[in-house]
Length: 249
View 1 (cartoon, rainbow, N blue to C red):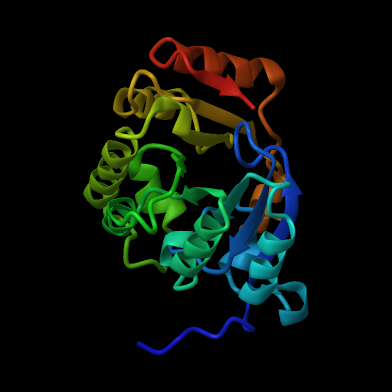
View 2 (cartoon, one colour):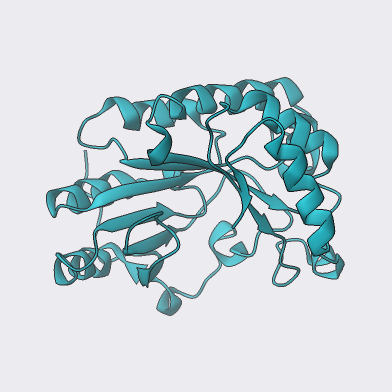
């Protein structure tokens, strides 16, 4: 297999974060490319892979940063886009683990086969997994996949892959896994909360975030007002009836 060049622009490096890896001071790397098209996504340049190369970091820069911050940072987050699609992800995990970092992967949960491959390989197994769970399957098959996607309309597909990914992740200790939902009006409503609550483990850490109506992948979403605080809390209280660990982050 041909070696991947380390000097190719690959993503955006956040050198230090205290919010991306629960309980750890960490660095984060957001890789290019994604297999779905969430209309509210604010990382649209990474998803569409249209960031200027001079606004991206190389894998070598990531490695240099990991070596420089060894002993200061204790965690490293690989996000995106969708990192399970990216050929550089295994290289980054191996390097980070060699240097003593705990590795967290952020995934959209639509690639359980790839996720299983990582989990079953001791060299690649993430120490922490965060999975986005956005809405119910019928909305994944329409709003989230996008009309141009080969996944458009495939409700049963999304129902299957989401449950498979949840089953893989729930084998982790509760302190090393979480699920995340952005409260997007029109996309996340009471029936979506009820569906998600029905498929998550009862001991899940289910973290909610308010929708940000700026720089959205679909410009129409820039015009949507976020839920009010009371509306958001009402949805979270509904989630807490089934999942005690549901909270607004």
